[in-house]
Amino acid sequence: MFGSDLVRPGLLPKANYNIGLGHTFKFLKKDPLGDEITFGYTYENAGSHGFLHTDFGSHTEALGLMRNFAIPSAKRVTGYTWIQSGITSLTGNALVRNRHYDGESLGLIVHFNDRHSIWIQETYNKIVSIPWYTTSSIGYTRSW
Image (cartoon, helix red, strand yellow):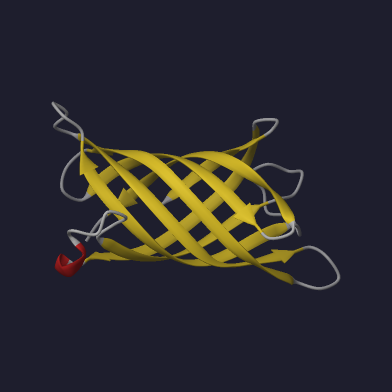
């Protein structure tokens, strides 16, 4: 997903670039948390220049469990929940600091066809030693 964040508090626009892989498993269909296992890499700019790269950023590698669900009477829109856990590397200091990452997302997918869609997502983020924060993201995805 290629998109942007509005980090709160303050609604500061920040760069957020994510690439991920996921696969739906039939044996997880009855799991209430999800049926798709994901792996993602995210770069998020934490500096003062908004969308431009700065020395201060975070690089996150996370495994996740996603559940897609239909929205009644909506043909081109579906919803999803997504729980992720991984490692965030915080850059821009004398030493790179690695911290545990926990992300919980709720979102909508607007499907243009079988391969192209726009994802709109709200995420609660928790990184050890950093106060929790939420992000609102929008991004384009291409599925294969």
